[in-house]
Image (cartoon, rainbow over all chains, first blue to last red):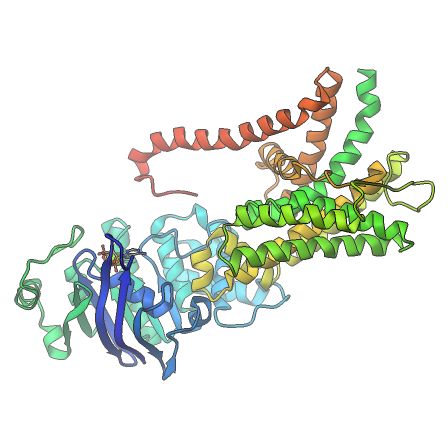
Length: 264
Length: 303
Ligand SMILES: Nc1ncnc2c1ncn2[C@@H]1O[C@H](COP(=O)(O)OP(=O)(O)OP(=O)(O)O)[C@@H](O)[C@H]1O
Ligand SMILES: [Mg+2]
């Protein structure tokens, strides 16, 4: 379970570039929740994920995972709770390292690293099996450098890495936005499969309204650093893009604006 | 020509010793993606510690080990300045390097040049026995590469490589990137000081200025090695070896240009230009290639 209590974040405070990125966010994710997150440009979607994972520290508020207050814990220490996939396919993997080495690094998330071999034989076999399930032909390329992979392959690999050690929360930040539509659909399908098979508590930021409605059991919409809509259950199942846009306009008093938003 | 052939073994021996230094630079510059200028100081520290201890009667191997540890300490300072105090790596290195100048003079009790005579001490390498120096230097290179090859294949070693390759990814996977940078800087400067200890023996003295411009020579060795052997040497151990080969080639070229009449005072200018060219050319190459590739790939492919 993940709890956010009264999170505020102001960038460049006291300068002309001051920006209130998060303006009091409260959110509780229940175990097994698959929450999709949408919102306009600069609404604070990425920032909220960065607050949860400790990329930046909060200005006020609490981040609680499974009852543990992690608000002041450095990023690498909280990493044991979270699996992450980023928008830029470059961000989630080490390009100069082999596929097997990347997976082995991820397999040790939250564990003590020692002077034992970085990748062992048994693991390699397990990695091969897991890669086969991705159906991207990566199972025979364990020793290829990740830098040689396509964006879609890298995102799928990052997804696998993020879930090798079952995370308390899986955090996806527009992880298919940089991919072409076909690859994007494939990565989303893999995402959905991994999430449901492992019953992962998940937050998925997307700019695609349709995907936000299709996937998950809960949808939240952000606007100007706040959560302005939180829809779940039957209401979520019956959502359409039109009703969602209408709701947004009613609550925010503005039109939905996101350069990259796909409304259908 | 004859003179050149005669001086060839000496150039190779010197190249091997600097090659160990280049391996240290490889760790920071290539593995960690940090430009560490501490090395100009830690090279001289290694020489000073070795000579002072040996002259004081300490066993040469123990002296060299302590020289290595002194270099590690220098790396630790830079690492702490960089990670704990947020000072940019280059500046942190410059600060340590500057401080080391005074410290090195303290080590030698104020002498800017401290001789060590091969006739009095059982030195591992010396100008007066180049064959022996080549063999001993070669053994050091093999041992250092073997240890590093093992180390960078361990869980900790992997996490250091990830730290250099992609710090955001490393932290997302629970890796303490600050600690790893410190480990890399410690290891790197230890090796640089080891090389300094060997160089002092080889040339017969430790000099407070013996590390001046060392970073440029180290970089030259790393880059020359990469340009020439990069296509065939993919394995990590071989990449380290190519840095040593780069050092050897560097010293052969230097010997050549000096015999061709280059004023020794112009050497540093020459070295700087060589390194600038080797660093700059790949950038322009990729820039020109990038221009062509944008339409085809959207320019997203950095690797
Ligand atoms: N590191 C930073 N420094 C300064 N301002 C920042 C920083 N990160 C985010 N911001 C600002 O905070 C606001 C929220 O940004 P955030 O990246 O969370 O938006 P987002 O909802 O993810 O938008 P997008 O759809 O564009 O990805 C924006 O105005 C952004 O410019
Ligand atoms: Mg964003």
